[in-house]
Image (cartoon, rainbow, N blue to C red; front, side):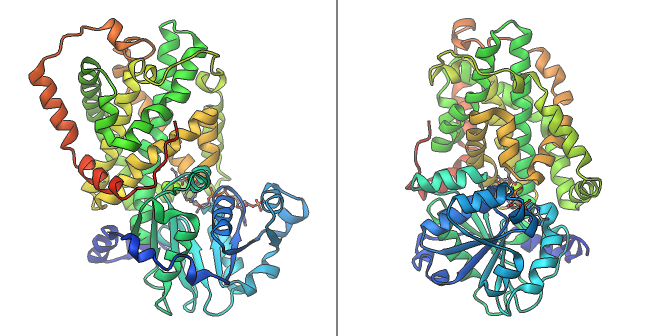
Length: 491
Ligand SMILES: NC(=O)C1=CN([C@@H]2O[C@H](COP(=O)(O)OP(=O)(O)OC[C@H]3O[C@@H](n4cnc5c(N)ncnc54)[C@H](OP(=O)(O)O)[C@@H]3O)[C@@H](O)[C@H]2O)C=CC1
Ligand SMILES: CC[C@](O)(C(C)=O)C(=O)O
Ligand SMILES: [Mg+2]
Ligand SMILES: [Mg+2]
């Protein structure tokens, strides 16, 4: 098998990467009808498996699980997840031959093995779905011609796929049909019905391609979504400890800070997040973000280039072949950081304090979101896709950190995202060493407004406000958020 994207002629690479049509609500007027009464079998009951299965069942669909024999016999977590939630469970041999739709929700690393076992058992003309196109795009897996291959990729960690559905909203979703596997021409109808079943249609759906989903998903998770939130957490916490701020306070400020700060981002974009700061703090955060962007641009470019060339997937697959040597080493090291080991103190931090006492964290978010968006769009990924993979998803990841720090984030996201996150974090921390030397408690730990010069140059402020508001991500975001009429408050 070879990398599918790399084998495409340049013309098709550009076409596939740029595929992104924002779908109108009216296109979902048939709801889940196309899948009503069909047998949907999810392979794997982990993070996405359980969340998507619960949502689809609550949407009136018939969902069951196929698990490995050993998982059933030894009552592994996947078995417990499915049975305790009242789902029918069986082995591949028992469940797959009668399934109309088989949804592969096992970790990307396992896809080749799972596909080799599952596809021969699938009935003629059935449908196979994925939530991430790595197996098709990076590994070049070819699926039997009679099978329809679709993708329904929630732009969110699994915990939030369920939580947003229960709030009556959903998470933005990319749907796609693999061009080489649409024998009956109804792949898109199946993907749309699946997406309504998981609640994705309420938050916005992009009709995309396997290629565009994979390249944008990898870039978002490695840089702003997980990588920079991890780096920013560790650096912010360590700086406060170095400067004598109470450890319990510092731990709580960082752990909950991302969630509070990015809630403002989710509702009103970077403009609203920056407007939550006083004018002097906003000017400072703007300048810090500009500096951060300059320092991190080469790293963001490297991640994008490595993702596009296939270098990233090749090296990650080498780690798979070594039984996840790097992943496991990095996972352990993250668990040993002082931030991870220091419990949040029993202190009150008001919602506004999270902005006033964490100017640096606001600057990290602004820099990371804009840079991820800029790097993706400059590489041919469409604005809407880049927006979901940067601005919209950052709050959803921040919600996981608020629950149980980086451990929870890395537990909930896919192993692929976790691997890319560590890769970025290990390269980014040394890059920011000189920058961090200049940071003091006025930027992280104490109220900026009580420690800094309060004078504001009005000309400078007007220029800064215009630069924030006129960024392309703000224009794209305003349009996409206007369609998110059912969005709910989290904080
Ligand atoms: N995590 C997330 O939030 C997101 C994930 N995705 C994508 O969704 C897919 C699923 O990811 P995620 O939910 O994180 O996966 P998990 O790591 O949570 O999946 C674990 C499940 O896969 C099963 N499994 C593991 N290895 C095998 C194998 N060799 N054969 C069969 N079953 C196996 C496990 O069962 P067992 O008990 O048998 O080990 C378990 O049920 C991936 O493609 C990922 O990229 C997309 C968006 C977000
Ligand atoms: C952010 C990581 C992700 O792509 C996701 C939750 O969307 C993943 O692979 O887990
Ligand atoms: Mg993703
Ligand atoms: Mg991912």
